[in-house]
Length: 107
Length: 180
Image (cartoon, each protein chain N blue to C red):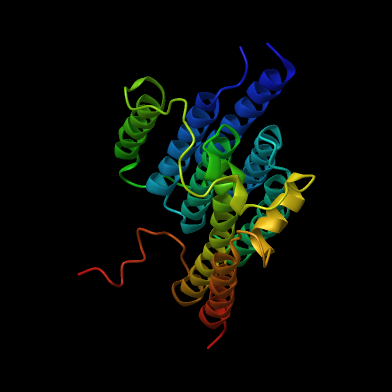
């Protein structure tokens, strides 16, 4: 038996849920960001897997999955830069990166 | 079991294991280092899928830039007990566990055993091969052709919009992160 699309889909699903757990359960804001990065990577693996096993004509010719993954990587890099700048700015004012204590906008 | 399957299983085990280390580890510097391993192994998966360009970009951007960015942020937001418990769980972490398990079971069910799982596909009518140029020799040249080509079908407009997104994000990061 060789590799099938399901191998990559299940791998992507497992990684996505590990990242989801990291994003939901952690108190450190940087750990939440790490979870989100793992989730984006899982989606990229799924996209590239679809692109490899895809034989529908226009989409396989134009490598839609791989192009989509490139744009996800672009947006993820931008998101990481902005989020870390926000975390550092919050740390400078409040001396904490605990997402449970950053509740200024809560009412 | 052929070689590609063997390599896939090795990479998949290291990938899931190091992702679990990222989530479980109590010292956040260790989980950041495990995150670099996750990124590197993901690029191995891309190589298995014949996506050389994305594998290289993954190493450059994720394992290089994003990992350094995260380590710098860890350095700048120093907590007192970084060795013992710098990566604590929230109060409701036990609630996150069944939620994530349910999501995993749902996705795996939907993609493998459900009657709506992906099956063999047929060619769509409409714009087919003729809209594309001759196939470039390798994956990198192919993606370059698809992103930049002025004559063939290409993703020039989304590419330019992505560059605007990057510019806005860089300027926003500078404005947010600077000293008052």
